[in-house]
Amino acid sequence: MNAVGLVLIRIARWYSVLVVLIAWELMAHSGLVHRGLMPDLASIGAAVLHGIANGDLAYHSAVTVGRALFGFATGAIAGIVLGALMARSGRFEELFEPIFSFGYPVPKIAFYPLFVFVLGVGTVSKLTLVFLECVYPVAVNTYLGVKAAERIHVWAALSMGASRWHIFWRVLVPTAAPYVFSSLRTAAHVSLIVVIILEMIGDSIGLGYYVAFKSAAFDFADSFAGTAAVIFWGLVFDRLIIWARNRIVFWEPETPRIG
Image 1: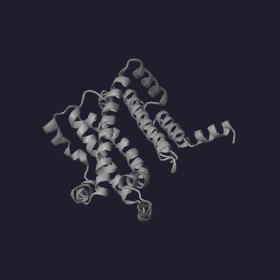
Image 2: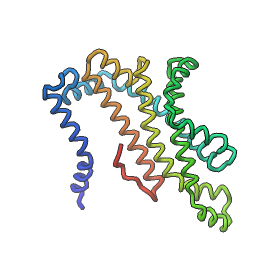
Image 3: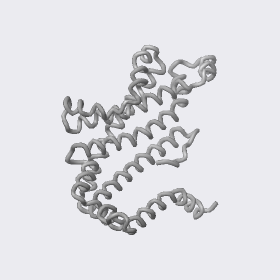
Image 4: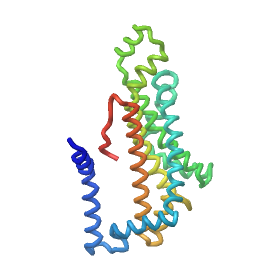
């Protein structure tokens, strides 16, 4: 297949996005919804360009992305460590596995008022909540990934004289890696979603604040421009994790169908 054909296939995979944009434009011009509430794509595009030109979108994006990345990174590191320890140590499993089993379905945002009371309404309370939201899926999937290692592979490594350290890196880590990256992909989106929600609830900076403020001012073109920035950064997070996964877990590449 030539290069043109490959490009067309890649474009065709995103046809559903084009369908949504066309439907949005038709609805905006249909008169069924007031144009002030549902601006057309040209108005939103102009608002995006204006937000970039005056620096508003860049400033608020930097705040939101910085918070999301910090919470995601710390939550991912802690989750990987906790998940591996639970899978390899009976004491850690007895101590932490019930916490993750019972606490997983609980929306961590319910604890936000407590965090605000203890840590204040600033960035620290937001980062703490993002950390909690990210650590759960990563820890659970790491735990399940290490546990999924075939016993016969471990026995084969032991029979060939492999140490526990070599078994961990050569058998358990390759088995767990696809699970870990799947959870990282989920946690990356969760980190951005949680930051946006918290900025909407109460803040004076960040994309969540920008979207909420512009909506309250009935400036919906700018509000949707902020939403477009959120979509952009979510896509960037997703593609970067898939890029890293396909190079680290090279024996089991993942086609980026969703994101």
